Length: 431
Ligand code: URA
Image (tube, rainbow, N blue to C red):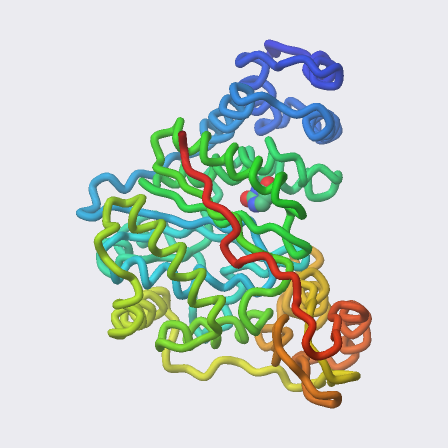
């Protein structure tokens, strides 16, 4: 088949900071998906995009081309509005687990297509798979039935949704081109728009444990995604939230499920509760149900009821004991004082090295592995008190995890105040 363009011309255009035409974008995304543009050519183009950027029209067209590479779902026939949440990924970010059943308990259906973790940020599916029997893969028919009957579903995104992104994301991962804002925004939004949700709330993480290390970068990513969603007819709002320090007190699969259950039972760490409620309020407002207060549904147990149905509908046993790691190691405070820093990235890497995450797609994760924090920034500790407990089935991993944690926390003299960003830093909406 003769091709409409030459890949080299497209690469050179972006390398020289020229705009790509609609036709060039449509062609290059399609040709890459069907194998007519080689990996090395797409890598060069991704690097040129990272270095030269793209304007709003180019990003919107690129996103549209990725959507067009696969199927589109629709939930318009459901008797309720739909809302979804996407987090750009952080350490200890288990919010989806309590959030999806909570929003469903408020009358808005939540179709949540999730992924597995790669690197130091955990994946929602890995967390749920620590529940005995729970199954991540559902057919489209099963997913729709669960949405109708239970109101919430968290499952693996099928291969049919934005296949161009699947291929491109794997390539970016090994070519140093993940961090390009146009590519991150189009990757996330192509999947969310193709998924067919009516409303979308984005949790854009900022800080050491996130892709975006600074507020200005996170704001630009959030604005780009809000514009893409709005232009596609999806009511889209973003919150920039703090990822300097881990969210909650746990990082690791079963550990995070346990903490989510505490939140659904009306307890849990204050930051996890605050962010769950903030995101739930945004999702409800975006879906036209801003009149419902999600805090009531946590308090009256109805969010927990939806969780139990949601787990059972996917083969999981909501009453089963969650796995625990065979070995633990406690890290003690070397001196007394105030914890002024506890670095999210270091805790994420430690949890990963303990076996909670994977280095390659094929790796198997340990359900019980991870890090349990006993203190957070702002806490006062005495020398010799436990700071955190490391969990793993394979104790030879402790050494490398401890190396990752070296220098990850700072204990200042009592009376010092940590310089903390608020949990919710900023809201970005259309207009
Ligand atoms: N998550 C995605 O789905 N895509 C990216 O590019 C980055 C994070």
